[in-house]
Image (tube, rainbow, N blue to C red; front, side):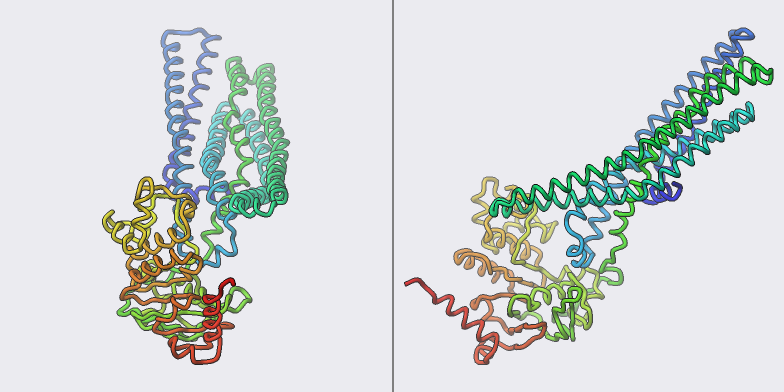
Length: 576
């Protein structure tokens, strides 16, 4: 229990001070609560020996002070609990968002979207709603119990000893509960992750589900995830119920024991009547906060498992730990004996090549030959297994990722646009750009006209991933984004491979504007795209098997000539 409470405290980050204040106020609340006992003692004394005006005023003064001070403490503590939960989880979510930008792309291959989504939603939600409440309730409950025990020892050590024994039995019960829930809480977390993953998969794959009539299969998978989540949550609750009942039996049993002792001590003459009455009434007020602590203690292991899940992300290595901000003197790109594999699957095997600045280099080769991987290594989406890649003579691993990516823009085959306005999507290339600069970039990317034809122009909201736009329109917006960024190195990953001829002509015009006076690396399969490149590298089997200009390679027998021949036949093919 103590370990988990410390973990919650560490997790609170910048809210540690507020959490300390909440705990301190809980302690003050307990002390002010003891004023009620003082008022009760005066009442019972007065009932037996008679009241005076001063004693009545004192009773009302103490009671009023106790009430006001407890209300103030409760008000501030309750507000702080809410503040701590929301603020510390907001801070942690922002931290996760910043951190994943610097993780190798392999992390996103090994950890599915459902897992990551579950962490920042369901898991963080559990922490957000429960962490501060659990910490302040448990610590406040035990502080209250400690104050009561000390006071009762001062009044009558026999009553104090009985209360201390009850608290120790209560703590033992909580300890047993923690050990039991330690096994089930991670299972519940896993079931929640699976549920989120399956729901996302079902929604994102709805087109395939409907096209192939897979609704029964998909529904069955999601239904199973829902039932599993329900089962694990119920299992956790079933575990809590008997222990919660036992906690109440211990506390109520201790209260009854206090009443019985007080009566016995009064009857044998070792306790006065006023004190006996005080103990009888106080027995019903002793353990209210400790009982609240017991009710929330069942959440400790769930919190522990949730925090562990979130902190797994912090344990994932990032790629920016040793880099420094660099500004290269030129933009020559050199791959020196580079090898890379995805797990056991080797993609690049001792590849070396040089791309001079302000030249256009085409990378061609069969599917799976490593073309995209090569470009992604230059942008440091992954780190090489051996060898090195330099830009301007500086190893890409010596850059910070921010300073490296300042020099590189990528236009991918599959464009991702955010659920935002068209202008904001273009401004991802340069968030500080003015509207006039956005329009200028859009004109160069040949997308200004179709944007102005939309209902709200540049302020038109587009669906997630650009669902409301055509493929060619999305590509041109992504090129406008890259033009606005104005990076000296441009990587084009089959940017025109899946668009129709009309859009391709517009895209080629946009790409021409984008690549003026830039160092350009393009992956392409179309003849018109690669034939004017300054140099062409042919990749196959993880090696560079050919290199040269179009005119040089077309004269050689090999993959490139075969590739061009097939393309020419495809262009000339027609129905008769």
